[in-house]
Length: 352
Image 1: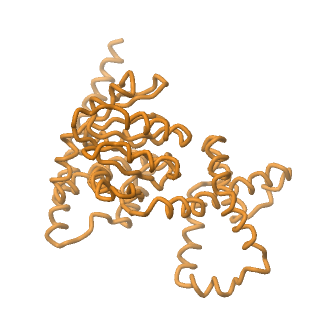
Image 2: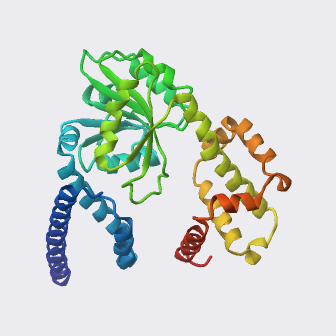
Image 3: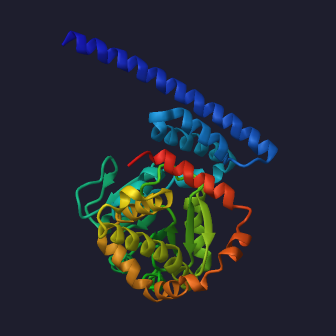
């Protein structure tokens, strides 16, 4: 036992040294942030980050977090008022699925986070016993429940008495047609809008990832309050109207899902086909399996809501209707870079 204690003491010393070095790294990053402010330079430096992550090797995921932490400290110096706002607020997340958990970890770096979920699985965050308790206690409420449940939750929140206390309420559902009208039920002192994170729950570094903000018609100014939550965290923000949002999502989510699911279905029905496939086949096979990471209910809902758009896509995908030369001309400046990136991604994935 004495030997174990000695080894643990050595580990403690190493941990202290790591913490000290991490602190120094963050402070150096802040100095770089100050320099960027003076020179009006952007925080994002993708090339530099990629080199750091390549050097990290097996510790790549850890360095993702270190880089994100450093950039947040840089952003704090560039937009301290926004961070001060977050630091004084409490975020309540209703629904602790994969996306709820990812965003809880992200926002907990700068503000207090509590969660409510019907499952008793809330990690180290404060766990509320009911939606009512969370709503009363929190300043900002994010609804990250499954799409079919979200309208019911938003409607429930709208009926709760806030005693005049200003709050911000938003959801992150994939489609907005069922939920946006319900926000009209909230009092004017509660700021409401909808948001859509355009990244998956498997994302390791959220810096620069896109979040689409969808205002409530007639309450467009409320969307500023929702943006003020995401912006200081380094997300890239876009705004779009509700109807346009849902039509766009049918294309940017529905069509890729159709491609992935239909391809992997074909693979599953054709025996040993995969052993003969080249890079393109392998990439589509990986993508199809990745799509299956989402629940069957979610995939089926996406496909059903996008049905008309998917039929249009299939009608336009006949070989006789595709002018490959015209497409090459349109994207000629990107083709070589995309081809090289495509192969690097497959190399990074390793053999299967």
